[in-house]
Amino acid sequence: MGSGSGVSNPSVMNSLLTGEQQALYQKSDVIQKILYHSRTIAIVGLSTERQKASYFVATYLRSAGYRVIPVNPRAETILGERCYPNLASIPEPVDLVDIFRPAADCLPIVEDAIACQAKAVWLQLKIVNQEAAERARQAGLLTVMDLCVKMEHGRYSGGLHEAGMNTGIISARRVHRYI
Image (cartoon, rainbow, N blue to C red; front, side):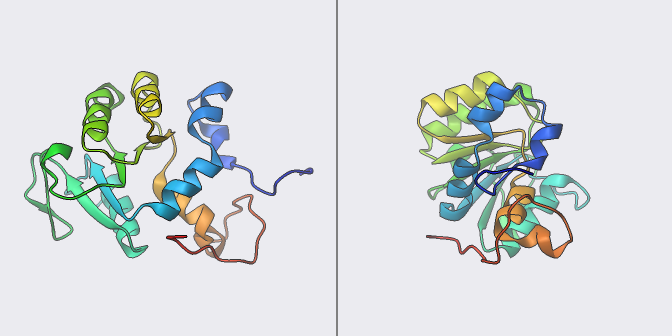
């Protein structure tokens, strides 16, 4: 430990990103802004299979109070919500586009996120597409890459402390969303 802001990111030790990329796409202030101001999250690649990470993340985000919109062209409903084949089909504004697709699929999804005026794009843990992330960032979208939205939400909301995990954040205060 040492002097500093009191916030560290232990997950970057396992990141696929370079230090320079981490500085661009894993910034704690950007992560917190996305988590605290987003209300509607479109999850692209949300699976119908309960054991898949995307399903688990969606369930967690719903329990945390977010509206989750599934985007999966091969499903009609997931978690009791109507599925949409793509972002352009969603009839309401989306704050965050969370991507659970292979890296090679990310650029067209980011283009769709820009077109539908999403405020942020999140490429999930181990999904790295520099071109897609840079395109989102240049278009003014808040952008996170190679981190798990569920893990980051738990870390910043204090939920991981309850599970006995060291988040690198020292605080007795709970953070409230929609600030």
